Image (cartoon, rainbow, N blue to C red; front, side):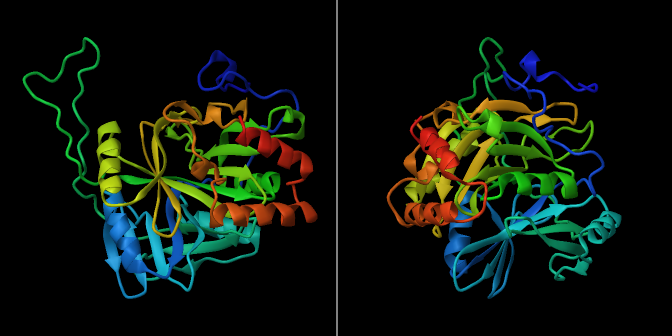
Length: 377
């Protein structure tokens, strides 16, 4: 295992790779990004976007007539940039490079060049397109926002370990204060090509692979991918890629202090008329406590807490994909979360299936059968 932990020891997955399967990393990537910097969207209604953002737990970092920057309480860049557009769409992620020199190496390897970012952000970016056509920025030397007052986690009495005496537990029903951006999930019709692109160019490494039941020999159809920070632990996934009939945003996730912050914040959102997609529960891959919501434009966003952190020594786990395997506990996964509830989104995905089956990509009839089996599991 080249000095890496054996996944068969039960550290995070019951099974590891078989001989000849994808190793989940490449030797000598062009650069190794440190983390996600921010996500960029376009929306026609910035007022509605800002109102929801405050209810979800963001703080406005900057607002103009045509742009909204949203931040968490941690120091660093804004988490989300929203610019005014004719329609709502996900523009793409920005990843943070370790230094400006990495941008020069990446630019040379991809036949591109570093360019200055707007003054409100500072620094430089190399703008690329992954094989799915998604714009991917790699940035360096951006402005750093100072930390804000954070929401303090509750003090718990855990079993017989009593730490709270003569004090009641009364979490306020207020927005869960977002601490930071955690990850983004995207769907692609070119899963394997897109995965290899991120591993090769950005130095990401796979934490877990999922495959359709009965189709392991055809390779994985989803990967949870983390940043390689050596011995420094990183989020179980900063990016997740899944095979599907269209290239699209699936959801993004934002860390909050603890379960009480997540649950009380969810009650605040519900009372203010916003729609929960799925939750509250705890995932299997990544272990996060989760709660999924829809913003006014239909984008899915997640509050999470208590996620797994892996260093570079952990090899990928392998598991079959199933709807019931998305959580350890919590309510059954919803049709809305799976994208199959009646409505415009499911109709768009249905049309995309017919289009994808006529085109040359990885989503073929066998993959469609595998996806349908997962949805019914």
